[in-house]
Image 1: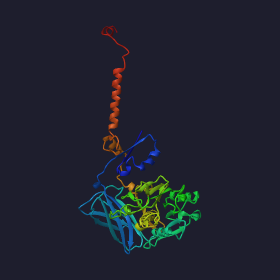
Image 2: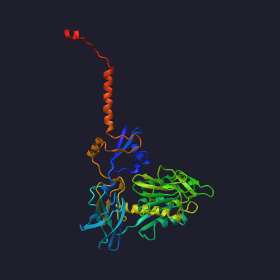
Image 3: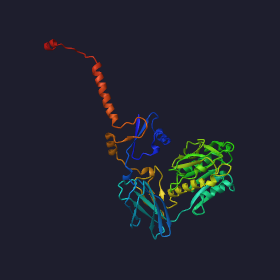
Image 4: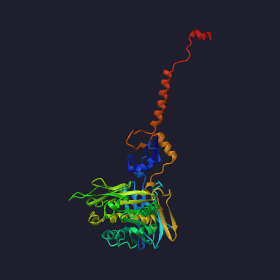
Length: 440
């Protein structure tokens, strides 16, 4: 049995050998072979517009735009409107296939919303983006550690509540008090303590399953307290040596490259103690001994990020590199967007509507933009049938690179071979001579 998957935007993760396919394989029989087909569209014919950041400075609204898909020597028009109908018209030059552009819009309002689009592009799936602006709401982070006055707690509190962002708030919670705390009131949960009870883990998993985001560190106490929790064995680096980062995802995830393209200082990270995740999580960064450094585990509607070392000198030099700060701050930006606590709300993959929109929630304008996974060219069922019959799809898997039209052709050829063999082998039941026919 073969399951054919047709897509118009084939990323590296669509490789059938990739771990992301395991969820799809679980839904079908294990014997079924998943064969993805891709209809490649020319990048220069499909521009994608995304608003990656919104900020308000006095009477100006600063929008950070990301345009993918090509370059143009001539200025490209960007058109849109404010929520009151006032038009927005700008022109920009697309420098390459990935252009970031800061757009400044004048406004006298303290809050509002609007939309931007690329009228020259005909793909309605990804050429329109929505934004909203206004005062920031408080973002609450729960920090669960064994001692409030410890060095680790101080590092995590400073990483989750920058002085330059006064709307970020933190609250310390002891592992014993988790059972008495409503985690749903927090936007982010950071766990850096031992496994207190199965009930505490269940509360954390309920928080994540409902759409929350959590960052889990190993227990500072060591291997014993990590038993049956998110981490298991703790490994110590050889004498006078340390673990280093061998690879990481530079284009996606919380440790992706900066907007300028500059990579984070992950090559300078030195680990003395690291713990191996007990969950089947997807590695986002890997140590030199092959163990995951940062992993991502999907649970219900939310995610758990597992960081296998601690930002304290006895474990690593992460505090000096501020890598945990970058991780937490990037997650907070996503949380602010998803929960409407910031300027912009972006629904996560799987829940994004086909048509993005602006809507009001209380006294706030919320901009709902589709997820990047939903921003490829749409293909109708009729187009898929036409592409399959014409053989215009490329097989994405490495094995047996056949065109789809070869399948019916081979079946027809096999049918004729079987018929021909039957005619040659099957003996006739009657044999008449000329005389016998004449008598008849």
